[in-house]
Image (cartoon, rainbow, N blue to C red):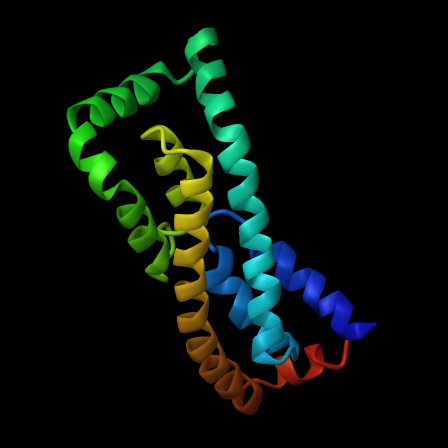
Length: 165
């Protein structure tokens, strides 16, 4: 039962914008999950976000156009997509993949999905490119998170107490 709770915590943390899988996996490992379980929980949380943004993102952009909300941003993305249409059609999926594969805050699921929606990628390519990028980012974070967790467990008594929760 404790492992299920830790899995859910890791899943939920991985859904938070800007920190996503980059913090979710180390968080799960520090909580005491095995790295592969933390990876699955983190990847599951971010995948749910990708699917939601892929299906709701274009609807939101269209609603903003209709209501006149954040038009400066909408017009800017439209101009950018129009200006670079050839390159985006050729490299858009790869660019979104690389963007999400780099495990740096701000470059991940949320921004990758929003960029893909803004340049009008098809849903299946949004999901494929962002999830594949997250798979790579998650693997990197498993190695980093496992190292960070071992250092924290050995040097910070607070985390040893947290694991008994």
